[in-house]
Image (cartoon, rainbow, N blue to C red; front, side, top):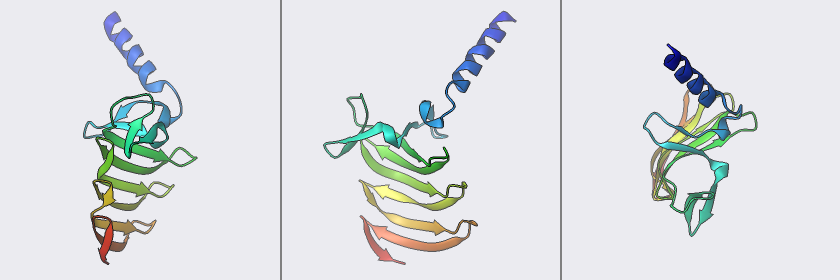
Length: 131
């Protein structure tokens, strides 16, 4: 019984440290490391976590002053590559799309705050090709 209590207390301590969501190391539902965008720095055209020697792979998360998520973007070996989602401060999705080798690529869906689709855009390697 004591070991269960100790484990519970350790888990509670780990999850309750720091009130600012940007202070904790976490992983998304795909197991990708999440890092606050403010903790990344650009070196030789690649994103690095400050104080680390290898280009970052994971999810860069930017926050509004309120602490709500503003943007979530996949980064692979220091380059924005994969899913990117931006949010309204109230929490709804503002737009979602894909980055390929640091450029917008594929369909980008833009939403009204109410959640309805406002626009669909098609990009090829950073260039808008269709609305």
